[in-house]
Image (cartoon, rainbow, N blue to C red; front, side, top):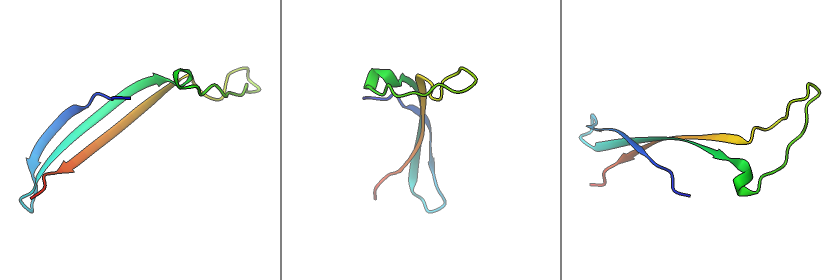
Length: 64
């Protein structure tokens, strides 16, 4: 799976190192990946949503 990343910025930190940031927010359907388990709750709803939100924040430091 390839996830799209949004560039959130580049900066030089207090030590003089260049840092770069990225973030991602993707919604996938768990059934597309064979995860079909679920349980019905007493209220009639289900325990696990079909849609799962994946979020990530990445930070990288440029090697010297």
